[in-house]
Structures are given as C-alpha cells and as structure tokens.
Length: 292
Ligand SMILES: [Mg+2]
Picture (cartoon, rainbow, N blue to C red):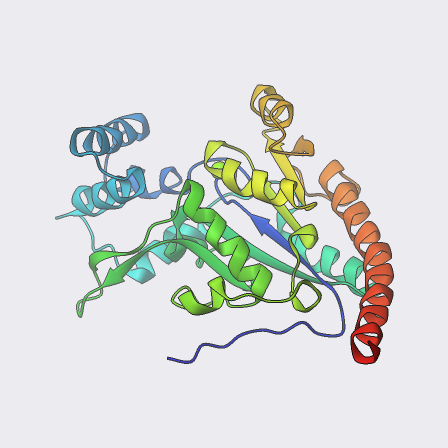
C-alpha cells in the first residue's frame, strides 16, 4: 500500500496540536448531550465506565466507548450522524471559533504555514461534528468501526497517553496516514524533516497529554498547559511546569489579544526568525557536501 507523504516545502510549517476536552472545550464531549440522552447521570456514567475498565483490566477509552454503545441500546442508534450531531452541541472556549483564521493569517504574513491537528482520546465522530472540524489538517482521536446498519461494530482507534505521541512523529515526518508504519519509522535527514519537533506547539490540560508535552519540550518545541479560566485552578499546570512537561501555561481563552493568542504569535515570530537562519545553514551544508 502506498501512502501519501508530505514533503518539506518552501515555507516552514508550524504545527499546532491540540488535545480536545478541557483544552478547546470546557468539558468532556460525552457529557454535553450524549450521556444526558441515554438518561444517565454524568458522574454515574463515568463511574460505571471506569469500573468496567478496572474490573477487566481494560483500556479506559475502550471502556467508555462500550459504555456509550450499551447505554444507548433500545434508546437510539449510535450512528456516525448521531455522534456528529452531538458533536455540533459541544461548547468551545472563548475565541476558539475565529482562532484558526486569525493565527493562519498571522503566520502567513510572516512566511510561516500554520497547520492544526487534534490528538484526542475523545471521539473522532463527535469532533467531526463541531463547527471547527474543517480547520484541522487531521483529527487523530478514538473512533468506531460502523457495520452495514451504520452502528458501531468494533472500535477502530483508541488513543491515549503514550500512543498520542506517535501522531507527533507522523506530523514531523509528513506521513499522516495511521497505517503508514514504514513511514513513521523511516530515517529522514534533519534538514529534510517537514515539521521538526521545534516547530510543534502542543496544547493540553491533563495527564494524558504528559507524554506529548514532554516529547515536544525535550526537542525545543513549545508545550502549553491550559487551565479553566472560570475555576482559575492552576495546580495542574504548576505541577506540569515544575516537572518540565510544559514551558508555558495560560487560561483556555483563545480570544484576540488574550494570553494564548499573544503567546502563539510570539512562537510564530520566533519560528520565522529561527527558520531564516536555519535555511542559511542548510544552504551552506548542501554546498559543503557537494564540494568536499
Ligand atoms: Mg483534555
């Protein structure tokens, strides 16, 4: 099977990768309509789902996916369309809806191609129903395999903790297809890497984001921890910063002139300046190789 691979182009790429729940949206996506529709109390739904995982040594995401399917039985069909409609109801943090256009033009004016990616343990089918879905180059999230009746037959993907990091390597090397195993492990000389980890921004809020945050941070990228501005509780981000998982933290507010807006624009400015120097270095490197 031949998979499409993106190669390094003229403009440096800055990839902004987002967790979803509590990073772009104030709550868990399942608890913004779906759990209520199956007639379950939100806390009780998670209690049962986590208990299922505990008792069976089962992955917690596989457990919530099964719990969703079981709870909906006899009430409604969990089709792709139904999940997408629940997705359309998901609340987003302030400024998220016009964030993408704003940041893309800021990057564009400075010679930087900004790309956006979701890396979430939530459900792909729901994220695809949100108003912002079209802004993402790729949505990596847990998902179902649907049968001929359009209902879930099996999980297709489940994404959490360390397996979130594989998507950073996919983005780095431009092999975005999840089945392109050869591509993600292939050696690419540093000067040919499409999105070096230093040009990756990772935004997340919690423990499942730690491996990605740490990886991005270790290679000179930019990990940002977000906290809910309404509760104002910063304990989690303080811990993430203390342990070198993130470099910055900010309230999850994406409005123009806000902290995240200014921070990401500063990252774009830095990237534009650094990549100019890097291009000069690569030019010299290529000339040296030809003549030695
Ligand atoms: Mg989260």
